[in-house]
Image (cartoon, rainbow, N blue to C red; front, side):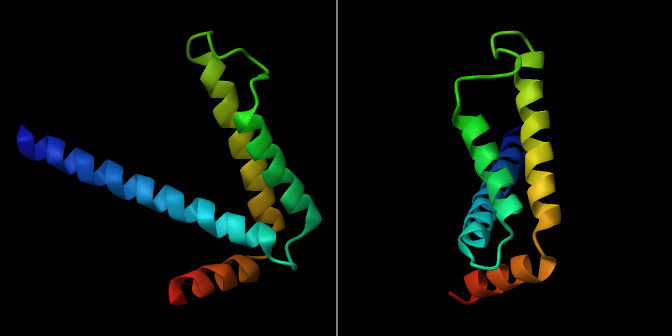
Length: 99
């Protein structure tokens, strides 16, 4: 039983580290002068929506309250990533890996 908990903990730890790394990548992508403006706006809107107390569906409604947040954030981030040239994201990843 302890082994299962340890595996879950390690898996969660890996996920959190990957998530933090991705946040840093896209933070650096936004700061890059070649990043498209619309991509910046989508990512900024995603951050604003995530931090804002205003929701489409209030969070106190079970499941739906958080589901709308996940869907809206996923759509905004997906649009931003698709609008950003892959070469720019790769360039930022490479630069971060060498530092």
